Length: 344
Image (cartoon, helix red, strand yellow):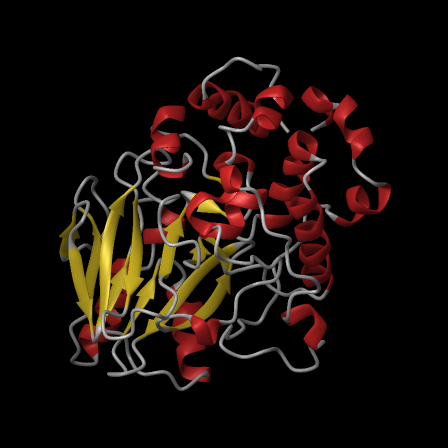
């Protein structure tokens, strides 16, 4: 960050600059359905609820009070288990509570995934949901399908119909749905990181009051977004732009499970462009406490990300000013802010 935003580093309190250094992902895998043993309740519950944001900032989320802490998973429409692997990746095991039918999401490390399922005594999944073709998300598809075939079970591998992904048996395009027990899994095409990238939006039609779940892959992260490897700022704005982006317009209570533990570095950058944002400052405090204990910073929510994620705030004058583009369009600001993040 010092190379392009050297002067802005003075805005970061010394404690935050020191504590938001890159962090190594914890091990072993944790189940996010339960509070880790010994974890202070104050860090699981919100240390302080957010004040309501302005209508312009929150629009459809105006009726909700957002918290800096991760949402309670009991409020989600499904059981979700976190499986960290390698230096910063996340795979997931999602289970329909009514039927017990389950799926894996982006299980690129078969050995770690199978070890975790055995340790937790979790039933075999019905399917793999794969967000995109990159090896650190799709690399386990073929091996896991072979593993379950040897045990006499057929594992479906569900992924994007817009790109070639290893091992797929079932492709989805934008708006297509897949039944996982009583859950409905809808594909949302989010091209940019790759042209074929999709996110999986999960709901329980029988329990509409429960929070939806979004597996966002490498499109939306806590406090950030994926690199524009095969797309443009306009593509990413189509996903994250407020209020009509394909992800931005999802219910604000939607619990978001992303592909990597990038939160500390994302927020370090966010402070450099939106350092006076009180919601961001509070989020930084919570994330620092989590990572000091080697705990995850996910899930997040769509409503929360609107409050502190600069890539969901490029329509706001403070982000345009930080990019030195006071009269620019939100798409132009998105492009500039992503360029700044790439060299941070």
